[in-house]
Image 1 (cartoon, rainbow, N blue to C red):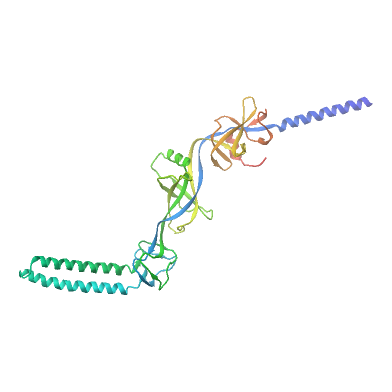
Image 2: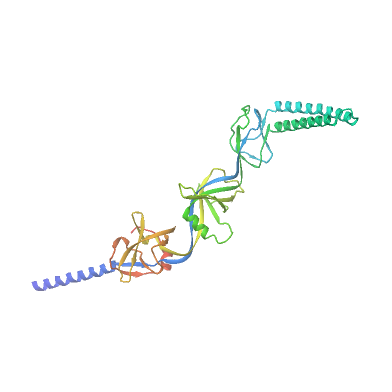
Amino acid sequence: MRKILMLLSACALLSSCAEHQHEKEEEVKYLVTSPLKADTTVTKDYVCQIRAIRHIEMRAQQRGYIQNIYVDEGQSVREGQVMFQIMPKLYEAELQKAQAEASFVGIEYKNTKRLADSNVVAPNELAMVNAKLDKAKAEVALAQVHLGFTKIKAPFTGIMDHFQVRLGSLVDEGDLLTTLSDNSKMWVYFNVPEAEYLDYKAKQTDTRKMQVKLRMANNELFDHPGVVETIEADFDNETGNIAFRATFPNPKGLLRHGETGNIEMTIPLRNALIIPQKATFEILEKKYVYVVGADNKVHSREVSVAAEMPDLYVIGNGLKDGERILLEGIRKVKDGDKIQFQYEGPQSVIPKLRVYAE
């Protein structure tokens, strides 16, 4: 009886070991896939500064007291609209004086001309009086200009900033009164690294301007797309960047000078190698994948990421089309392990992909 019990126990133990071994074999069957080679696009973000196409300082052109202010801070003004009035009395008096002098010289010229026509005076004397009259007329014109400068008018339609002076302020020639912005269109500046600039120029195969989008500070996309119109001439030696300028229409006046945001630039990629982000792991800020060899052994390999998309990486170097990479169980294997796996093509893996921690 005792022998029978021992035999039954041994059989149970062997059966348990067999079941455990079977479960272990089930556990080590990993999921493997390959890079997807396809044409795609990536969106890159760049911090940007928003500027009005015209943003100028309004300064006094004459010295005097501010007699009238016809506008208010933040107001839209029309081209030619009077904004400030500097007390004109002094300049009106100078104009009257110049006009009186011109009238006097005009009478003198007429008298001299009659005498010259009668050969009483020499032609040279008439010429001198004529020059004197021209000078007097020039003085009148100059006085009119000075008087005109006492009215500061908007050079273009735009929006005013805050006042730098108040009613009754004494201003000198050149003193700042306010600033004026033309916000009908906006210039948006953003810095692009040298490598991305070279890629952009290499892929610019036609004369069409690249369209970009603007994500505003509230994380909303601006209603209208912009176009990249110009690139500055020089790189910044300290940052290695070069400034791009995109122009955006601003029909509703939503954008204002000095705002910030992010430019979203969509860049086409041809024959890109795309892999799931979760197929990678990081060591000392470098990305690696496990490549499954012909002997079913896994070997870690460093890869460079050319671009990033949701759940996906576009690989620049380190992988070839058709190579097999470990998709799941990365933390359960080590370099050189021989594994059992199930292969699933990238066309079926990527649509249902989600990044998650194992």
